[in-house]
Length: 82
Image 1 (cartoon, rainbow, N blue to C red):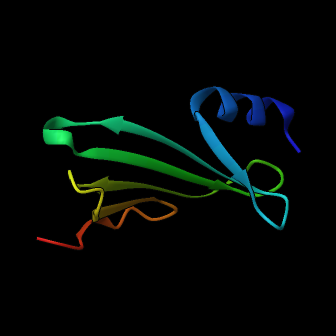
Image 2 (spheres, rainbow, N blue to C red):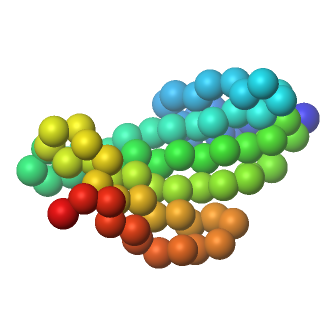
């Protein structure tokens, strides 16, 4: 495991949980306009190598309305609700 990468991820993301295989799922949220929020989710393996990274958009009722998968392939924004 890379202790340097882990410490950097812990400093950047205010919440994380351990996965069964020794990796982690890191998250942080940003409040937007009109009580919407964006959640950034980074999944890493036990060596802190990034497996995936996405942005989730939630409306003012805390419903997931859009996902933007950014890594490993940028798939652009996918609207889930109108």
